[in-house]
Length: 202
Image (cartoon, rainbow, N blue to C red; front, side, top):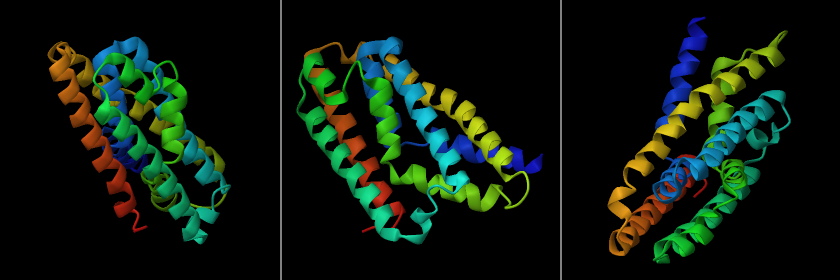
């Protein structure tokens, strides 16, 4: 029971702290509201929980054994996020912003982003090393942790969407929208590059 409480706290910290997906959710919600942000929230949380499940099942054990795979995932994610940040930085209207963030494909965008986010993979590996004991019942334990992570991540990511919605009134003027887009682009770029530093692939 104590280990589950500890994992709950771990999942909360991992989910609520700034990251590329949270930044995109906030940016999307600020202009399109809950209907557009909700699929991104669900997609991001579901993908992160699935990664925990995959790592726990041993299908991705090669991540720990082959650092080059970690580097490939990290740089793929950073390249994609840098491209999105660049387009978001240059966007001056809602139409430009929709193309940059992929409005209408929120679930897919957020889920794919998690799959190439090295921070999520390293988090999942940490979960296996700290909260899972090899042996009988390991599969059930991994499934439970994956479910808990999903349930904890949902409200955490929803908070970022709520912050974006609260910022919507401020971004109604074209000038403010432009500066908001640029601020989100810089934040997205910083969080993207911080992930490769965190996992020591530079």
